[in-house]
Amino acid sequence: MTRFIYYCLSGGIAFSVHLLVLTVLVEFFYYEEALATMAGFIAAWPVNFLLQRRVVFQVEDKSGTRFFRYSAVTFLTFFLNAGLFVFLTNILAIYYVTAQFLTTIVILLVNFWFNTKWTFHTEEGKDGIS
Image (cartoon, rainbow, N blue to C red; front, top):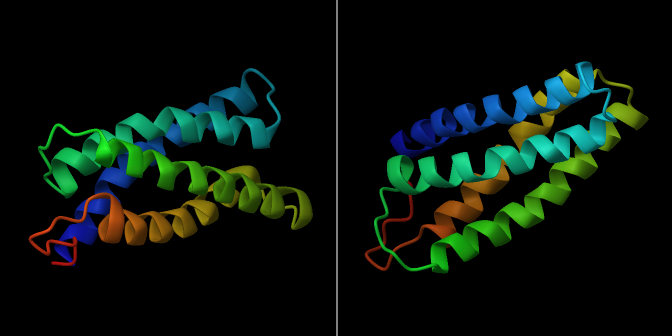
């Protein structure tokens, strides 16, 4: 449970980056909301990886395997984020900031499961559930 709390806190920092980019692009540069959320997701990606690797899972190995796995999970959830966001904003007509909060809850749970069980899993059995 402690690991999940750290995961949420680090994810909150990355979400702040995502939401900042999304809001600035929509409100000041008049980007379409779906494109802006994709840009925000991409901007938050390296922040989230570094925090998860160092703080949440405390992995210090130098291999690119974890980065590759994290990127694969992130690639999949990038499309999940975009699809769910478009559904909420365009089909259900939910305000884009609210839609991003709802979408982020889903992404958080999916990412936590994949990153715990696959990306940052270690042979010692430390799977992130502590």
